[in-house]
Length: 264
Image (tube, rainbow, N blue to C red; front, side, top):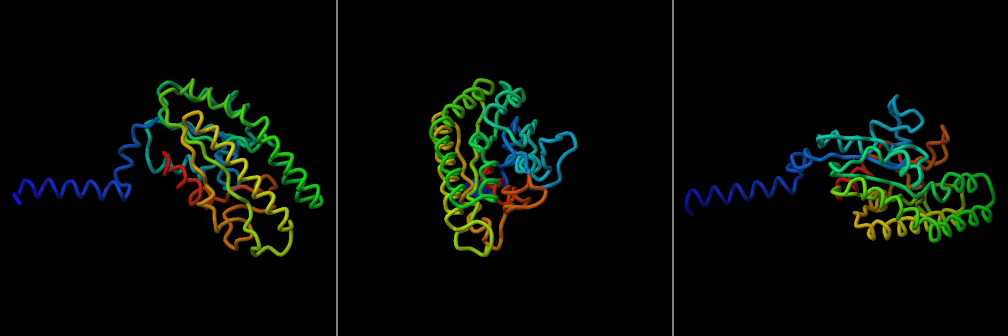
């Protein structure tokens, strides 16, 4: 083999290794104009370290959008996700951050549209039958009203950011069944809640695909780290109460960040 051919071969191998290891990604991401939209799972509620400017939106410095930005140094980064956001409030209060120059968008939305917080409060405070009924009512909303709301939001995102790669992330299952928890909800309640999370993710994934967006589930990342696993990346019922059923800092860094990074 000639010296020139050997040099070319080595260069190709080095580039390939760099790509596999992710060493080439920061340079590629440096040109991105990234906007992080969504609800509390994107703002980082439960992870702590909230920025003062974000107020009740509770945007965390250890939420996955900020962690991705820190690692990849995009050309611009706008973090506007907010605790409590619905598809409607994302559309009405967050999309001003998008523009024709936006190249990357992340979003979580849909859980609050079907009453996530009130359903979990019902399950914690009331009977098994009441809990299961509340969850089933939320699932009914997932299949009736939520698809249209997601379609409306996704259409508005595409209109404002026509060139962007849009990554839609889902929600984790909350419980490991027959796990380490010996008090609290019954396995029937936990199973029903997990099934509802699967239904919610399925609806969101379908509407994201219809919009031409990239879907990224977080279920695989959180498997083995649900509540009752003994190594939970999610808060159970806790104080402050708003942290309940939200990812801890490790859930953002080891759950949501890899799921977003692989799709972005």
